[in-house]
Length: 176
Image (cartoon, rainbow, N blue to C red):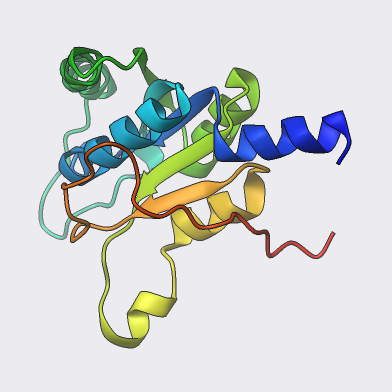
C-alpha cells in the first residue's frame, strides 16, 4: 500500500471535518450520531442549514404566505448556535453555518470549501418499498459530493455511546 492510498483510506475512515446538514427538525436523531462519529475520528463538526429562496416556498391555497428571510435566518442561527453548544459540551469542536440557497447547492459548496471528509444528513424514514428510494435531496447530494455520505433516519436509536458500532465501507454509484 502506498502512502497516498494509506492516507486516503485513513481520511475515509477518520475524517478531519464532518458536515451535518440539518433542516432543524432532524437534529434530535442526527446529533448523537454526528457526535459519536466525530469522537471516533477526532473530527470537528460543521452544523449547516440552508434557508430556501422565497421563490421556492409553496403557496398555500387561499392564504397569502408571509416569508421573512431575515427572520428565518435569525431563527436558524439561534437554533444552530444552541445545537453547536450541545455538541461542544460533548467535547467535539463545532461551528454553525446558515447559508441561503437550494439545499444541494449549499451543502455541496460547504462540503467542497470546508475540506470535509464526511457528510451526515437526515432522511424521512420511509417504510415499505419507499425505504429503498432516498429522498430527492439525499439522492442529489450522493451524486454531487465526492466524500462518504451517512444518512440517518428518525428511527435511528440514540444509543451510540463510545463510537459507532458498525461502520460500512463507503462506495460510489458513479459511473466515472
